[in-house]
Length: 266
Image (tube, rainbow, N blue to C red):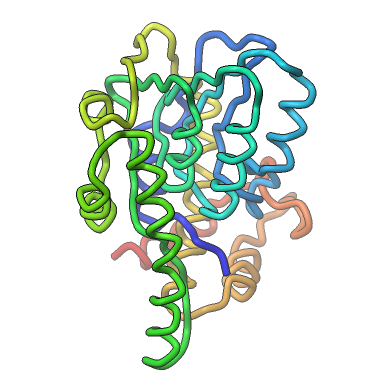
């Protein structure tokens, strides 16, 4: 089972912060400008395996992690958090645009966390897609409780806030602005606006692929399995010159899906 980011979070990321990047990146920087976990639609994604390889390549030096991600797979996010916490040197996390869902878990690995004034940090309960009767749903809810508590404990440890207060924010699927994140202990300092820029090409790519990610989750919410949803979207896409199913993402034209997306959103 995968614990995922809700479609609405992808929408807000695409609307508000897609394409935000740092002006400078040194040789000790790890960038997280994609979804957390393997991303079927782009062929990319931030994984624990990739982060571990980057840390080995950088070596025992202080690390800067730049984040602008809508999140993704919570379990992958926890694994990345643990890998970063094991690094022997200090880690500075910079939230360039958004650290939502699984990306907010990773952000908590920073010994120092900086966030932009117009950036967001978003926390919520473990969100999965499940099928079954009321007994299955009850079993799933009970299965999820320890993971929600683990996130409460992690956020409370980093912020110093009461666990019950954290749990309420997670229940409410809370977006925190930069100043709120600092006030509540989820970040330490404001990131200067002149340290960031908007890469228009990256923004266009982010928004294009984001539409298909959100649509896939909407189809799953409607009752399809993820494999069936992907098969249907690939069939509808069907544009000349499109990437093969084995390597979706690069250079794809998703214009043929605009009608389906509009229908799902209406």
